[in-house]
Image (cartoon, rainbow, N blue to C red):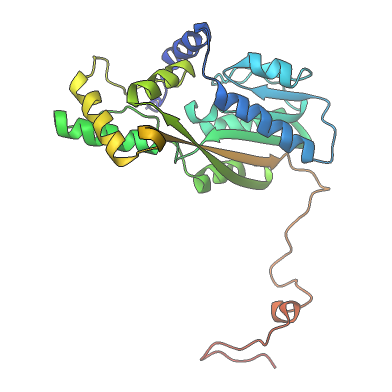
Length: 279
């Protein structure tokens, strides 16, 4: 039996194309991702000569990394095995129907000891909007429908890197809070960044205006921002891993330590009650 898809890919591509047709697309999150990648790559003591970027907005990356091969975040990535020493997956992994598969494809595209750097929207993203919409729809219609993409927390996302076979996995995150005039203003910005509802299980009929009106009231009351505005959170999780190579650090075998932890910390070691002390 085939697995149900999370994302309606044609709907997502239409949303992105609509965003790019606007006079001022709201790509500030992607611009933030570009700056974050440039900073992190600059901290690595290595020159990357064959980078690749997986993204839904290629234009930003052509200027940021001119030497990079920039490819779309399709289910099958257009990356050749072992062709790159750096692969960046830039703010598109949250829409992937198979996120582990996406990272595995990135790993296969890496040369030994090549760097994978993924930026993905984390579970705290738009938590205010999710709460307001859920409460409003329950009150008005008595039910719930899929409206906001489910996003993983940092622990789950970090585990994906290890499951994909990358070495030395690390996950960290940062959150940006953005103030909006009201809920329609936030919705307009989401359309302008191509992040409208593209869930495969979304409602295919118009939502009653009363749901959004009530959601706006709940949002303003529950998550007030400065000067009567509302606050929206965007959490970006940064995933790092390396294609395995024999030169990389390896964890020590259990029991192979040459010195007790208590000695290293210069503290007195005390046995637990009921346990025997070493002779």
